[in-house]
Length: 127
Image 1 (tube, helix red, strand yellow):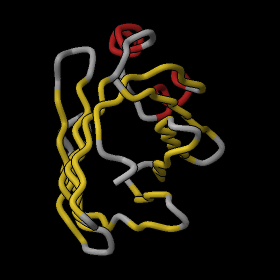
Image 2 (cartoon, rainbow, N blue to C red):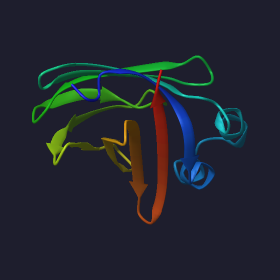
Image 3 (cartoon, one colour):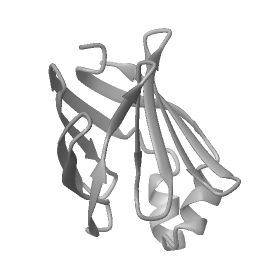
Protein backbone atom coordinates (compact mmCIF):
# COMPACT_ATOMS: atom_id res chain seq x y z
CA UNK A 1 0.00 0.00 0.00
CA UNK A 2 3.07 2.23 -0.15
CA UNK A 3 1.84 4.02 -3.30
CA UNK A 4 -1.59 4.96 -1.90
CA UNK A 5 -2.16 8.64 -1.16
CA UNK A 6 -2.03 12.09 -2.66
CA UNK A 7 1.30 13.34 -3.98
CA UNK A 8 2.54 16.77 -5.16
CA UNK A 9 5.51 17.38 -7.46
CA UNK A 10 8.54 18.58 -5.54
CA UNK A 11 11.12 18.58 -8.35
CA UNK A 12 11.62 17.33 -11.90
CA UNK A 13 14.65 16.82 -14.11
CA UNK A 14 14.69 16.59 -17.90
CA UNK A 15 11.18 18.04 -18.25
CA UNK A 16 11.62 20.28 -21.28
CA UNK A 17 13.72 17.88 -23.33
CA UNK A 18 11.32 15.00 -22.64
CA UNK A 19 8.21 17.06 -23.53
CA UNK A 20 9.80 18.29 -26.77
CA UNK A 21 10.67 14.71 -27.73
CA UNK A 22 7.00 13.76 -27.29
CA UNK A 23 5.93 16.68 -29.49
CA UNK A 24 4.20 18.70 -26.77
CA UNK A 25 3.72 22.34 -27.91
CA UNK A 26 5.99 25.01 -26.39
CA UNK A 27 3.09 26.92 -24.76
CA UNK A 28 1.95 23.76 -22.94
CA UNK A 29 5.54 22.99 -21.90
CA UNK A 30 5.83 26.50 -20.45
CA UNK A 31 2.56 26.17 -18.51
CA UNK A 32 3.72 22.92 -16.96
CA UNK A 33 7.32 23.89 -16.21
CA UNK A 34 6.78 24.93 -12.58
CA UNK A 35 3.38 23.36 -12.05
CA UNK A 36 2.95 21.14 -9.02
CA UNK A 37 1.36 18.07 -10.62
CA UNK A 38 -0.99 16.25 -8.24
CA UNK A 39 -1.00 12.45 -8.32
CA UNK A 40 -3.68 10.50 -6.46
CA UNK A 41 -3.25 6.76 -6.01
CA UNK A 42 -5.58 4.20 -4.49
CA UNK A 43 -4.39 0.66 -4.01
CA UNK A 44 -6.23 -2.49 -3.01
CA UNK A 45 -3.77 -5.37 -3.20
CA UNK A 46 -2.72 -5.61 -6.87
CA UNK A 47 -5.49 -3.25 -8.04
CA UNK A 48 -4.62 0.42 -8.56
CA UNK A 49 -6.34 3.62 -9.63
CA UNK A 50 -3.78 6.26 -10.64
CA UNK A 51 -4.92 9.84 -11.37
CA UNK A 52 -2.85 12.82 -12.41
CA UNK A 53 -4.11 16.40 -12.47
CA UNK A 54 -2.28 18.63 -14.97
CA UNK A 55 -1.83 22.43 -15.30
CA UNK A 56 -4.65 22.78 -17.81
CA UNK A 57 -6.97 21.22 -15.19
CA UNK A 58 -6.93 18.08 -17.31
CA UNK A 59 -7.17 14.86 -15.32
CA UNK A 60 -6.13 11.44 -16.52
CA UNK A 61 -7.14 8.37 -14.53
CA UNK A 62 -5.94 4.86 -15.29
CA UNK A 63 -7.05 1.76 -13.40
CA UNK A 64 -4.99 -1.41 -13.59
CA UNK A 65 -4.21 -4.73 -11.98
CA UNK A 66 -0.59 -5.83 -11.71
CA UNK A 67 0.27 -8.37 -14.42
CA UNK A 68 -2.98 -7.99 -16.40
CA UNK A 69 -3.41 -6.16 -19.70
CA UNK A 70 -5.65 -3.10 -19.39
CA UNK A 71 -6.85 -0.08 -21.33
CA UNK A 72 -4.91 3.10 -20.52
CA UNK A 73 -4.85 6.68 -21.75
CA UNK A 74 -2.14 9.35 -22.12
CA UNK A 75 -2.54 13.02 -21.19
CA UNK A 76 -3.05 13.69 -24.89
CA UNK A 77 -6.04 11.35 -24.92
CA UNK A 78 -4.35 8.51 -26.81
CA UNK A 79 -5.75 5.15 -25.73
CA UNK A 80 -3.56 2.07 -25.66
CA UNK A 81 -3.27 -1.36 -24.07
CA UNK A 82 -0.57 -2.01 -21.51
CA UNK A 83 0.40 -4.35 -18.72
CA UNK A 84 1.79 -2.89 -15.50
CA UNK A 85 4.41 -5.01 -13.75
CA UNK A 86 5.71 -4.91 -10.18
CA UNK A 87 9.41 -5.71 -9.92
CA UNK A 88 11.37 -5.13 -6.74
CA UNK A 89 8.78 -2.68 -5.41
CA UNK A 90 8.74 -0.67 -8.68
CA UNK A 91 5.74 -0.35 -10.95
CA UNK A 92 6.69 -0.36 -14.64
CA UNK A 93 4.83 -0.11 -17.92
CA UNK A 94 5.45 0.88 -21.51
CA UNK A 95 3.51 3.85 -22.90
CA UNK A 96 3.34 4.41 -26.69
CA UNK A 97 6.56 6.52 -26.82
CA UNK A 98 8.37 5.79 -23.57
CA UNK A 99 8.89 3.42 -20.62
CA UNK A 100 7.66 4.54 -17.20
CA UNK A 101 8.57 3.36 -13.70
CA UNK A 102 7.25 4.47 -10.31
CA UNK A 103 8.69 3.67 -6.90
CA UNK A 104 8.63 4.88 -3.32
CA UNK A 105 12.07 5.86 -2.02
CA UNK A 106 12.74 7.74 1.19
CA UNK A 107 9.02 8.44 1.57
CA UNK A 108 8.88 10.12 -1.88
CA UNK A 109 7.16 9.02 -5.08
CA UNK A 110 9.83 8.79 -7.79
CA UNK A 111 8.55 8.55 -11.37
CA UNK A 112 10.97 8.02 -14.23
CA UNK A 113 9.96 8.18 -17.90
CA UNK A 114 12.57 7.17 -20.48
CA UNK A 115 12.44 7.60 -24.25
CA UNK A 116 15.74 6.52 -25.79
CA UNK A 117 18.43 8.52 -23.99
CA UNK A 118 16.01 11.22 -22.79
CA UNK A 119 14.86 10.85 -19.18
CA UNK A 120 12.24 12.72 -17.17
CA UNK A 121 12.53 12.18 -13.41
CA UNK A 122 9.75 13.57 -11.20
CA UNK A 123 9.95 13.48 -7.41
CA UNK A 124 6.74 14.04 -5.40
CA UNK A 125 6.04 14.44 -1.71
CA UNK A 126 2.99 13.07 0.09
CA UNK A 127 0.40 15.72 0.98
